[in-house]
Image (cartoon, rainbow, N blue to C red; front, top):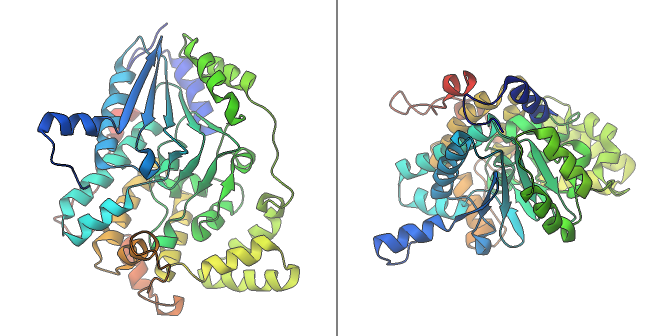
Amino acid sequence: MQNGKGSLPRFVRQRLCRFRHERSFCSLPINSMAEDLDNQVLVEGSGCSRTAILNRPPALNALTTHMGFRLGKLYKNWEDDPNIGFVTMKGSGRAFCAGGDIVSLYHLIKEGRRDAMKEFFRALYNFIYLLGTYLKPHVAILDGITMGGGGGVSIPGTFRVATERTIFATPETIIGFHPDAGASFYLSHLPGYLGEYLGLTGEKLSGAEMLACGLATHYINSERVPVMEEELKKLATDDPSVIESSLERCSGLVYPEKTSVLHRIESLNKCFSHDTVEEIIDSLESESSRTKEAWCISALSRLKEVSPLALKVSLRSIREGRSQTLDQCLAREYKMSLQGTLGQISGDFCEGVRARVIDKDCAPKWDPPTLDKVSTDMVDQYFCGLSPSEPDLELPTKLRESI
């Protein structure tokens, strides 16, 4: 088997590209603390494959800075190892990954630890870029909750396997944030204006719906996941078509339920294709009045309860993602994420986390409180650098693209 950076045959790399498209620490001794942190990402090895296991089940495997750095280090080592043909990622417990650890971010903000916040986003976004340009096939097993950053550490890879336990969403506007971790890239590439719908409302998709719209590449009943994993362990290959064949043997056909929003894509497109959030809401109100359909009523209700500023920022972000590459989206999202968390424009992120996760009163006081109070300058500021002293996100684009 030929593999490893620089030694992967060109035809395999070309084929792989085609497939890719379609805190609070305990008082522990230093060594014990390091071991505990490393347990946040476990590793299994078998033959010519390796499996990264996101392992924070009480927190639904929410991503930490350490997890971002550890994943990056592991994946780089595996990519350089000619004896490793492909990589798998999965989660412990009932989630694949529920996104970034927003509670930790909340406390970092309250403590004024700006550098630690930047480190979090740099670690995560750099890993996502590595995954999006990975030279070896990647299989993400999305058997459970897959939200926010969970999509970021899976969707850019080659294969994504969904199950009936899969619940996908990009619910960032609910906490006064924007879909990040590469979401503006993959949401903008979904059929029609489905990405705008998901990104603005934070509505959920099932595993079957993920498969239907291309977010997942395969679907399997969760009880057969161990069988699929055993089949993958037997493979000695770096050929994505061989891995795909193995996945297909374990997969089954599934279709979205009749009530799925995917069956109303024409109506969805009509409502979410507008240039402004206000026009989208007006269109939804008209459609809701005319059809009385549940998806429309639910979407309208969501848009009226989430952060107005986050809505406008998110819409622009997804629209810009339509004409940008993954690295460009990540670099832009990094600026947006720092602007959104440092509170220089609005404190919506901290207020959203407080209301939804800390106090759980579900009664956030957004600033500004309404869409008409959100100025163009406020939105524009999200897309600008913080200051000349704040460097942009540095991704190894020249190095990765020359491989």
